[in-house]
Length: 262
Length: 247
Ligand SMILES: Nc1ncnc2c1ncn2[C@@H]1O[C@H](COP(=O)(O)OP(=O)(O)OP(=O)(O)O)[C@@H](O)[C@H]1O
Ligand SMILES: [Mg+2]
Image (cartoon, rainbow over all chains, first blue to last red; front, top):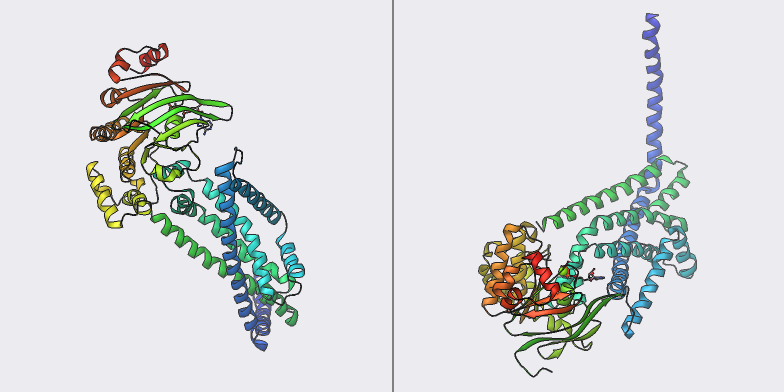
């Protein structure tokens, strides 16, 4: 009994050692196939850069569109909600507001992958510029979400701030610019940061239409090497690293903004 | 157009409704240069609405408001220009929390009056010294007590060099021990000849500083008089009832 008890683990250990060696040998071979052979690491580098490019320009477009939409929506709400439109500019504002609402409803109500396919196969059907299609698609998508974040940020500012500014003689635009938006921005920064984290991950949908960003190249390497482990884990780790770096930067910015008043 | 050049604000038949709720039902009033008009009345009677109509923070639904000879209810008038001449102080202070006291005070003068930064800051520091807050110039509003906030709000409005100051219950949100410091500033301002319209529940202030006291009830001015008469010999039964409760 005693001997058996001692022998069994030893045996298992020996067998395991062989297994572990084989395991590591397989692993290093598979690592080599995935990254070293044919300089495949370059695929990952290029894919990462493409993902960063798409996400960056889509975020810029998203911010631009989002702020524009939010400006229309909150101007409409502040000026015309519960009132009749009287002047020509009121009517224009009403129409713009309706268009913005339509845009936000459609974008938020359809899957991103469908939006990318529509952009790629219908709108960019005759164009070679795949990345621009992705940037436009994700930018337009992000704009709808940013718009709602910014609008809720504007609405969260006490209306006394607005009145104090107007009573000093500032017009609507300057009030927004000097008083409301700086405060709203601080409130919405966490939500905005979250939106961009979502955006970065969502660009992986572009792989679906064959744009060679990070997800696509991971898949490509996998199909060449018949190895799933390293391509997918590498993709995951790279996305994670990008997200962690962005989160870190956002936290820093948040802290700095918070310190700028009391 | 007014013929009496001493009249700063003339209100004619002012009406204001929120939907079906008729808050102001025809208010006539005249505020002369140097006047301190104190507006009193029960809660919900329309005092704030009246005051906020004077600088068009609320858009009147009827009547006219003539300020320095111009009917500012005329839609073609650039109201922003006229608001620069009408300082307003709110119950909730409404300082800009993301700006220092000094920035709160210089934003308007720099952007709207096109003063140089140096000029605006010198002017702001002088005003702050007058209300005993020169050492708070670089503090943020969040670091101030209620009384200090309200004093800053008053000098922020004064920095625009207005012709009239509108106060909407400036001491109602303050702890009792801070009411005095704010009233002191307002009294000093009145003595210096500033034209003021003050909505308040501080009857002592009305009596001491007011040149005319008006009683608003259900959207109309039912009694208006010099303070001695107003408090010493009230006519309207609603006013008598009101005074018996607040005095
Ligand atoms: N923006 C608004 N929308 C709808 N109703 C309003 C609005 N502002 C004021 N009212 C209503 O108008 C009436 C008069 O309000 P107002 O604030 O002028 O009263 P007040 O005399 O200042 O009262 P208080 O002493 O409580 O400040 C109230 O019934 C109030 O509910
Ligand atoms: Mg009120």
